[in-house]
Length: 424
Image (cartoon, rainbow, N blue to C red; front, side, top):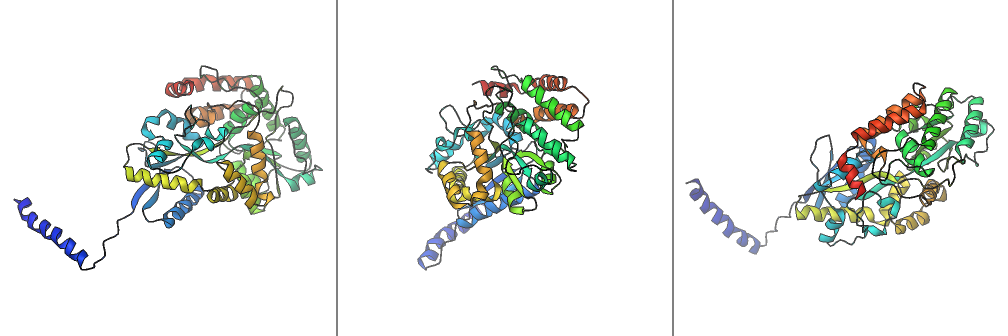
């Protein structure tokens, strides 16, 4: 009965619409399609992401991206910014995501993921080079030096250490000159297991996908840092980027951290900073080889509406613009995704601004094999590794015992689905 009462009103509205248009009344503009964009960045990085999104939203009226904070257990949103530590769990759940190259193809947006450098596509592309996620904010670890501290110690700031043996001599002189923190590091598993191994030609896993980072190179390196810690050459501040802030405040003489930090350090000018390649062990044959490019990647949720995917494709094209890539490089220090963007960065930025970028690129062009399994990308394994490294550096366990335990414990929690994925 209620339906019958509503029908006359519906018919009247239908008849009235064309009359209104005929009378010259303007048609109502379609509301923009809203697209959720989830992330787990800290407050500062989250604000930077929102500025990028606001810029995209202001350039067109058809789509409006809305930034939302992701928590454990959330279903995938239309867009998902995935950190290095989360990447492995997203790889295991790939069925919940729509491959990026398919999104771009169906939206008829020009896109060829194979134009990205191979080291940027590791873990994010299929065997044909098609990207199922976009590497939007990648970097590699490098060595930073405090030039003023080097001068005070009688060291040449234009000749930073290239090897760990040279870094030890520098740390000794920095300590003798009064430094309470000659050397520190951020992201310990990423720098001192994943990249230490790749840079020095050691493996972190077997051919069958089992963890195996307790070899001679890794044990020797961990023991070296334990010795440095006892000698007060090495000060450890935590598992994330706490050391970055201490170095930026002028507290430390040397820091190993992300190449993307260079832009922030250079812009702040609080510390006269030099940047050099990650030190390597020169007594290991064939070194140095190649470091790894890691960072945040953009994943697209499955089961969304075609109109939403069209908006996603427009946003990806926006991110791929050379000018946008230059901005990412200048403001954030991230590696440009394409050779065109790299050329634009070189031509538009001051040489001092791309010094860190040049060092990062030179490390990525080495002869080492690209590695897909990375302990820093598997959250439960990363936590175990850093627990055991801390035990060794604090002198509570010998380096060999700590790494043996880390491998055994890590293999026990390594997802079988991830191991299968890596062996495909």
